[in-house]
Length: 260
Image (cartoon, rainbow, N blue to C red):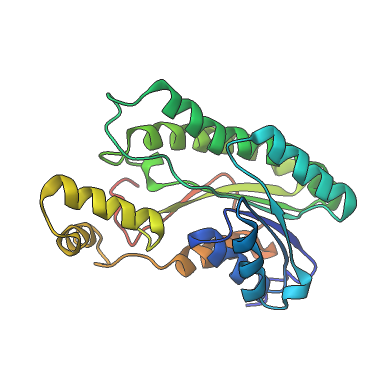
């Protein structure tokens, strides 16, 4: 299937590891010109070197704990280079733990990194999307927006807020040829999953292998996802072929989520 991304510019956040990096690689393989965003410049340079046709791609060094700085740096890039047809909002999830014992600053930090940063990026990139009558905004969230996950109290709360923000945005921007969709990863082999397994092992007395097997057994597919499997879903949603898919929460979780 020709996804027709050869003349598209994509801004990919959290793109030096995990789902973000896999998506950058996938979009570049389909011909998109990718701009990576993350806070570690050395990792950004390394990721650029791994993309198809590295000379076509670029990066922005920015910290998602500082939304005003993020907004400024992306705006400056657009003013000097080009706008973006595709935006992937993606950043690391909040630390785990029960919601009752969560500190107020944990909610504030997570809200800043996820909702505030998503919002300022959308405000920066949408004017160009409107001019082009083409935009794809894709948010990496979590299956917790359909079914809250035990031990991830702050994450469950913030992810739900982002999902509602996204659905509202989809309703507002659809008339301009811009779609807004959420991809909901299940257990995916990333650094975050490694941390979650370690925490489960520490609390349960199981070995990490036993804790991982117990998690796999909750998935009909009986395995964890690879980051590339999430990236393929994002890449399709970023394409012209997905122009009538708007405002959805798409679980990519091997069937683990029990709700419809």
